[in-house]
Structures are given as structure tokens and as C-alpha cells.
Amino acid sequence: QVQLVESGGGLVQPGGSLRLSCAASGTIFDIYTMYWYREAPGKQRDLVAAITSDASTTYSDSVKGRFTISRDNAKNTMWLQMNSLKPEDTAVYYCNADIMWSGVIQNHWGQGTQVTVSS
Image (cartoon, rainbow, N blue to C red; front, side, top):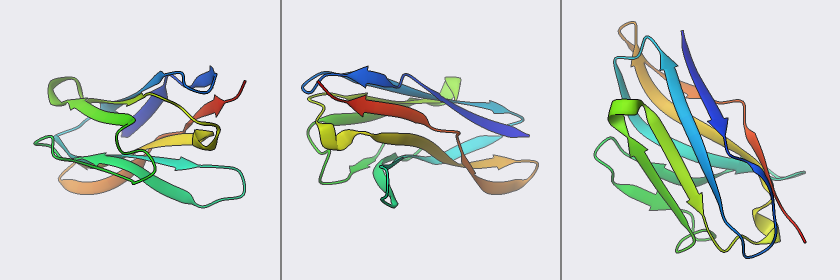
């Protein structure tokens, strides 16, 4: 079994920062591209950022220049550094990854972590 667990969410004032973590555990052979998604109330789940196994990154236009995605392949861990947070960043943030285990590549989701930006 493979599990993704997010942490680091919380309440922060506008302009503040948070760092989200996503740790993968289980019988993992390899992790390919990793993603952060977010889902605001009443809205669809949207891609925020992605990082390949060789650390190539992409960002949605709404977070470019404010958020930084990174990973440590040896620790099977990914982070999302969020700076200059805005109320519109409020959402549940989900970790997602393409993981090879038991000879197959499967896409996995974490349980999500709430980020609330409010004064």
C-alpha cells in the first residue's frame, strides 16, 4: 500500500506564509511527477504546481512568483512554500503523485490540508 500525507495547513493573515509538506510512505519503488492541487468551496479542484523527478517545475498563473514547489527524492517528500498569501488562496490543498509500486504506476491522492487566508 502507498499513502500520501499532507501537513502544514492552517490559518494565516493576508500577506503571510505557509509551508505545506507531503510525505509518501509504503512499498514505493519510484515516484514520478508530484503535484499540488487545491479545491475552494463550491469550485473545482485545480492544479497549483507540479514537479518532475528531475525537479522541473510548473505553476498555475495564479500562484506564479508567490509559491515554490520542491521535493527530496531520497525522503519521498514534497513541499509547497506559499508566500504573499491572499484570501483567494483559501482552499483544501491536496498532494498527488504518480507512484510505482508492486510493478505498476498508479496515481495517488492525499487526504488534503486546509489553508485559510483571512484577517
